[in-house]
Amino acid sequence: MGKYPVFLMFAGLFSLAGCSSESPATPPVSEMTFATAEGGKIAWADYRGQWVLVNYWAEWCKPCLEEIPELNDVDGIVGVTVMAVNFDGISGDELTELGQRMNITFTMLADDPAPAFGWTMPGALPVTFVVNPDGELTETLLGPQTEDGLMALMGIDPGH
Image 1 (tube, helix red, strand yellow):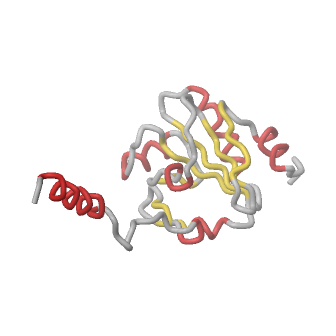
Image 2: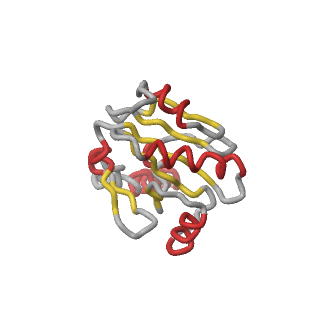
């Protein structure tokens, strides 16, 4: 037997080595859960039927700090949930304490949902992903947001 048939046999075996019927697939959106800074879990499906704003922030980002009071107010509106993701990857007690110092009253996530949803992060902060009540990403907003601007975008009467 020559060198080439043996080579082709091994090449075929190696090409199949990565094949498996058990591929680690991303769970459907209806089954996705994310850890919160406080150690709990949230189920993404629980937010279906409402607007969800996922805001990326950092302590060193001045515009991020400026929009926190606005986002706190928006999170208090029925049918709207704001979630925060720390851009620097701070987690655990350090994240909880930082959120308290910065007066973030909305949910802080320990898990970054962007990779699970295939969202592309812009190269600047703050950034807010807007998900409509049907669960579809409708906007990626760059820069600090205001309550009035977010209400207009969602079509919610400013008088709530």
